Length: 81
Image 1: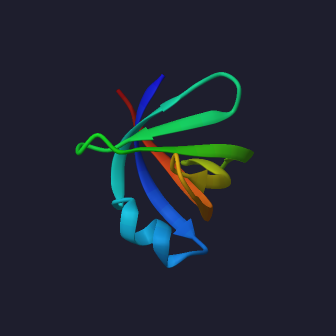
Image 2: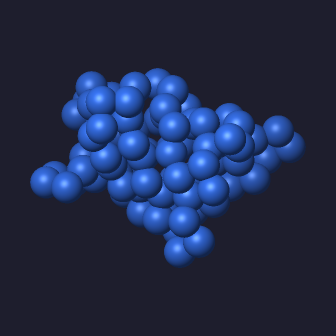
């Protein structure tokens, strides 16, 4: 399922520098969230928690690229595309 997302929070500056505030991603059924940026770079969010509020869907977990662990992050699902 493809989605438009917003990076809500992260505990490291490295993730803030590498991942834009809004981006497209793909959610797979096993809790793995793939983030593909417009420049072709890919990141993985291993979702540990899924939070439903009255108006938001939030995914929280570990975020990494192919070479390094970037930290923990909270991603808000803004729209399904």
